[in-house]
Image (cartoon, rainbow, N blue to C red):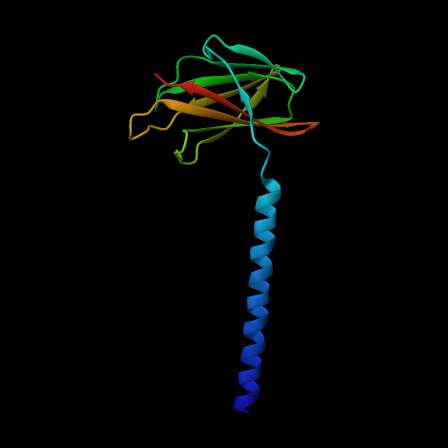
Length: 148
């Protein structure tokens, strides 16, 4: 009787290991397929005044309501043809925690009220990342700016 239970335990262990391996591989493949190509880097000298750029043959206008400061709300406005837009903020080589914003569409423009996280090192070099979903596909844009 002990030999049979040993075989059952061995078989269950092997099946569980195989299922775990399949799960890990599926998650790895999903992570690889969800990665997007390198972002299109946008250049804007004064994001408070706003900039109109041509990206992928389409106009994109981006503007901040005021000079961004950590822990102080400001408005982000983006005008472009899109199905949805999300924004996040990071620093070069430094994760700034989860701060992802879904922009809301209103009268052909996309808006969000943003609060930048505070950097404990006092840095002010930011990267705005826009993830844009359009009928032509998903696009990722990146804009560097400095906070006040």
